[in-house]
Length: 432
Image 1 (tube, rainbow, N blue to C red):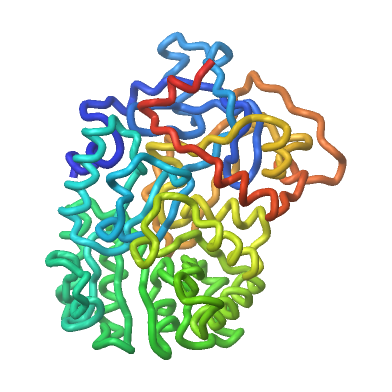
Image 2 (tube, one colour):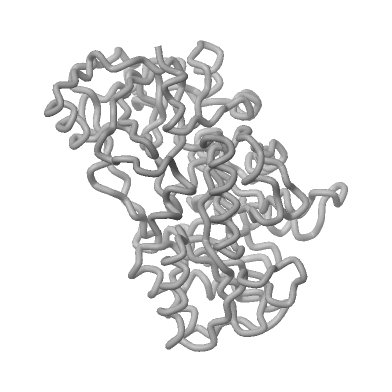
């Protein structure tokens, strides 16, 4: 497990307690824009400085006021939360606008080997790779019969008694999440008891479960079993409003992957129409949508996909919700080995909706607690705080700090396409 962590996240031998402090001009923390934010930077992690980080700095004689300046707008790592690394070049090419990807089904040994080789060759300039490990399915279920699924990428779970050992194996191999498939249109699926046992085993190990659902009733079955997210917006049936409201209230996330139904197919499909309709009503009910593309399925590049971003806007996501969708919230820790950087200039601030008075951390940032189904492996010592030496900026009356200007999608999307990921090991190159 430790070997996998080094391979995918940072240099070997790193001491997580040797973090240094840097100060960013602007950063998005807990869904709010903040100015003059202190970050703790270790060999394989960048995160807003916590009370613990500041105490360690003080003990080491480090003055936060003297922290070097990061002249940039900092976002949590922009993440594609649905890719298949084995079908793309994501692990082999330099980072584009994506800082991190979440592989949702492949042979975990292959993923670790490819990522380790790429990092060794590039010095950690590749996209950060997180993964689910193998697809867990009913024996003979999807995608075990597909030619593109290599040996080791699919594991059959026949009964509840098998669930714990199967999940434990994936976690031991380094899985950040667990992936199950419920494709009733393509073969057998887990019964309710087995599905619930998989979810329970994952929850004991603080791993979210993400479900691929196809066929009538499968989305509801996944939700009722307690999965954390659907791997696609449901596209094979129209879900009723009551079910959508229940899903939204239960904290079930959807990784939309809307563009997959349109790529290479012309002007649209029935599946896209169904997925868009479901997503619009899910969003209207207060549901959380996460950005993902199913890269590897007719899409192989390592960039943000503007078509997907525009479709999310068509599905009702505001520009603020779109920003939030890019950090894989509730599925992976918000902060990791990389951050996404944008220029710290007036035009960028305006496009991000951060050009008015900004919230400055004069008190610890509110900690967002995800629903029980989204069991994150968060470390309390990384809870963000604000440098007590900073001073509050003036703000307009009646306006919520950090949300003073609403960004426009037409300006936000091209701005985000210019984001550049930076690994903790290379942050020094961007400091002044």
